[in-house]
Length: 173
Image 1 (cartoon, rainbow, N blue to C red):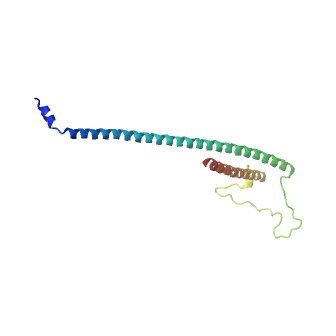
Image 2 (cartoon, rainbow, N blue to C red):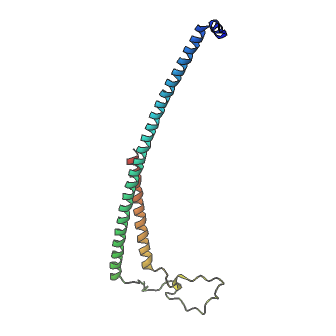
Image 3 (tube, rainbow, N blue to C red):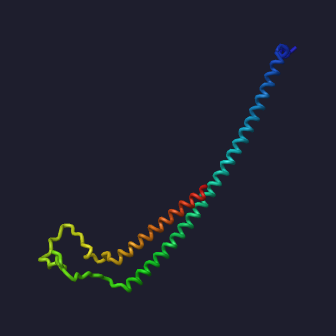
Protein backbone atom coordinates (compact mmCIF):
# COMPACT_ATOMS: atom_id res chain seq x y z
CA UNK A 1 0.00 0.00 0.00
CA UNK A 2 1.33 3.25 0.92
CA UNK A 3 4.66 3.39 2.68
CA UNK A 4 3.35 6.00 5.12
CA UNK A 5 0.81 3.62 6.55
CA UNK A 6 3.54 1.16 7.26
CA UNK A 7 5.54 3.77 9.04
CA UNK A 8 2.53 4.84 11.08
CA UNK A 9 1.97 1.28 12.23
CA UNK A 10 5.50 1.17 13.56
CA UNK A 11 5.23 4.37 15.64
CA UNK A 12 4.69 4.10 19.41
CA UNK A 13 1.25 5.69 19.65
CA UNK A 14 1.08 5.47 23.41
CA UNK A 15 4.29 7.48 23.72
CA UNK A 16 3.04 10.05 21.22
CA UNK A 17 -0.30 10.29 23.05
CA UNK A 18 1.44 10.72 26.40
CA UNK A 19 3.70 13.43 24.95
CA UNK A 20 0.71 15.23 23.39
CA UNK A 21 -1.16 15.02 26.69
CA UNK A 22 1.87 16.38 28.59
CA UNK A 23 2.21 19.21 26.06
CA UNK A 24 -1.50 20.09 26.40
CA UNK A 25 -1.28 20.08 30.22
CA UNK A 26 1.87 22.24 30.07
CA UNK A 27 0.23 24.75 27.68
CA UNK A 28 -2.93 24.93 29.82
CA UNK A 29 -0.87 25.41 33.01
CA UNK A 30 1.19 28.11 31.35
CA UNK A 31 -1.93 29.96 30.23
CA UNK A 32 -3.57 29.61 33.69
CA UNK A 33 -0.38 30.81 35.43
CA UNK A 34 -0.09 33.77 33.09
CA UNK A 35 -3.70 34.80 33.78
CA UNK A 36 -3.17 34.36 37.53
CA UNK A 37 0.04 36.47 37.50
CA UNK A 38 -1.60 39.15 35.34
CA UNK A 39 -4.60 39.33 37.69
CA UNK A 40 -2.31 39.81 40.72
CA UNK A 41 -0.26 42.39 38.82
CA UNK A 42 -3.39 44.33 37.83
CA UNK A 43 -4.60 44.25 41.46
CA UNK A 44 -1.21 45.54 42.64
CA UNK A 45 -1.25 48.35 40.06
CA UNK A 46 -4.76 49.34 41.16
CA UNK A 47 -3.66 49.40 44.82
CA UNK A 48 -0.65 51.56 43.93
CA UNK A 49 -2.84 53.95 41.93
CA UNK A 50 -5.21 54.21 44.90
CA UNK A 51 -2.27 54.94 47.25
CA UNK A 52 -0.96 57.62 44.88
CA UNK A 53 -4.42 59.20 44.71
CA UNK A 54 -4.64 59.27 48.53
CA UNK A 55 -1.20 60.86 48.78
CA UNK A 56 -2.10 63.45 46.14
CA UNK A 57 -5.27 64.31 48.06
CA UNK A 58 -3.26 64.61 51.29
CA UNK A 59 -0.67 66.86 49.62
CA UNK A 60 -3.47 69.04 48.22
CA UNK A 61 -5.10 69.28 51.67
CA UNK A 62 -1.77 70.25 53.28
CA UNK A 63 -1.11 72.85 50.56
CA UNK A 64 -4.56 74.38 51.01
CA UNK A 65 -4.17 74.44 54.79
CA UNK A 66 -0.71 76.01 54.53
CA UNK A 67 -1.99 78.64 52.10
CA UNK A 68 -4.77 79.47 54.56
CA UNK A 69 -2.23 79.79 57.38
CA UNK A 70 0.00 81.98 55.20
CA UNK A 71 -2.91 84.28 54.37
CA UNK A 72 -4.02 84.54 58.00
CA UNK A 73 -0.51 85.34 59.20
CA UNK A 74 -0.03 87.88 56.41
CA UNK A 75 -3.32 89.61 57.22
CA UNK A 76 -2.51 89.70 60.94
CA UNK A 77 0.97 91.03 60.16
CA UNK A 78 -0.40 93.86 58.03
CA UNK A 79 -3.02 94.73 60.67
CA UNK A 80 -0.47 94.72 63.48
CA UNK A 81 1.98 96.77 61.38
CA UNK A 82 -0.69 99.38 60.67
CA UNK A 83 -1.57 99.50 64.39
CA UNK A 84 2.09 99.93 65.37
CA UNK A 85 2.61 102.70 62.83
CA UNK A 86 -0.55 104.45 64.03
CA UNK A 87 0.52 104.08 67.68
CA UNK A 88 4.00 105.38 66.81
CA UNK A 89 2.61 108.43 65.04
CA UNK A 90 0.30 109.13 67.97
CA UNK A 91 3.18 108.75 70.43
CA UNK A 92 5.51 110.94 68.37
CA UNK A 93 2.89 113.66 68.26
CA UNK A 94 2.99 113.83 72.08
CA UNK A 95 6.72 113.35 72.70
CA UNK A 96 9.38 115.89 71.72
CA UNK A 97 11.58 114.72 68.85
CA UNK A 98 14.92 115.24 70.62
CA UNK A 99 15.95 114.71 74.18
CA UNK A 100 19.10 116.35 75.53
CA UNK A 101 20.59 115.77 78.91
CA UNK A 102 22.01 118.86 80.57
CA UNK A 103 24.34 118.12 83.44
CA UNK A 104 23.72 120.41 86.37
CA UNK A 105 27.25 119.98 87.58
CA UNK A 106 30.23 119.30 85.44
CA UNK A 107 32.62 117.06 87.29
CA UNK A 108 34.52 115.17 84.56
CA UNK A 109 37.66 116.04 82.62
CA UNK A 110 35.72 116.01 79.33
CA UNK A 111 33.87 119.25 78.64
CA UNK A 112 30.13 119.05 78.01
CA UNK A 113 30.52 120.87 74.72
CA UNK A 114 33.61 120.06 72.73
CA UNK A 115 36.01 122.67 71.52
CA UNK A 116 35.77 123.90 67.96
CA UNK A 117 38.05 122.02 65.59
CA UNK A 118 40.90 123.93 64.04
CA UNK A 119 40.18 122.51 60.58
CA UNK A 120 38.97 119.47 58.71
CA UNK A 121 40.95 116.37 57.88
CA UNK A 122 42.04 115.79 54.31
CA UNK A 123 39.46 113.86 52.26
CA UNK A 124 40.41 110.21 51.63
CA UNK A 125 40.65 108.80 48.10
CA UNK A 126 37.36 106.91 48.40
CA UNK A 127 35.30 108.90 50.88
CA UNK A 128 32.38 107.28 52.62
CA UNK A 129 29.91 109.89 53.83
CA UNK A 130 29.20 109.92 57.53
CA UNK A 131 25.71 109.00 58.66
CA UNK A 132 24.93 112.61 59.57
CA UNK A 133 25.92 113.79 56.10
CA UNK A 134 23.61 111.49 54.18
CA UNK A 135 20.41 113.06 52.96
CA UNK A 136 18.41 109.93 53.68
CA UNK A 137 20.20 108.97 56.87
CA UNK A 138 18.35 106.72 59.27
CA UNK A 139 16.87 108.74 62.07
CA UNK A 140 15.95 107.51 65.49
CA UNK A 141 12.31 107.43 64.46
CA UNK A 142 13.09 105.39 61.37
CA UNK A 143 15.21 102.97 63.39
CA UNK A 144 12.41 102.54 65.93
CA UNK A 145 9.93 101.88 63.13
CA UNK A 146 12.31 99.39 61.48
CA UNK A 147 12.88 97.61 64.79
CA UNK A 148 9.14 97.35 65.42
CA UNK A 149 8.53 96.06 61.88
CA UNK A 150 11.36 93.51 62.18
CA UNK A 151 10.11 92.33 65.57
CA UNK A 152 6.62 91.95 64.16
CA UNK A 153 8.00 89.98 61.21
CA UNK A 154 9.94 87.63 63.49
CA UNK A 155 6.92 87.07 65.74
CA UNK A 156 4.77 86.45 62.66
CA UNK A 157 7.32 84.01 61.24
CA UNK A 158 7.50 82.11 64.53
CA UNK A 159 3.73 81.82 64.64
CA UNK A 160 3.62 80.74 60.97
CA UNK A 161 6.25 78.08 61.62
CA UNK A 162 4.38 76.71 64.66
CA UNK A 163 1.11 76.51 62.72
CA UNK A 164 2.77 74.96 59.65
CA UNK A 165 4.51 72.35 61.79
CA UNK A 166 1.26 71.63 63.61
CA UNK A 167 -0.69 71.37 60.36
CA UNK A 168 1.85 69.04 58.85
CA UNK A 169 1.82 66.90 61.99
CA UNK A 170 -2.00 66.69 62.08
CA UNK A 171 -2.50 65.94 58.40
CA UNK A 172 0.53 63.65 58.12
CA UNK A 173 -0.86 61.27 60.74
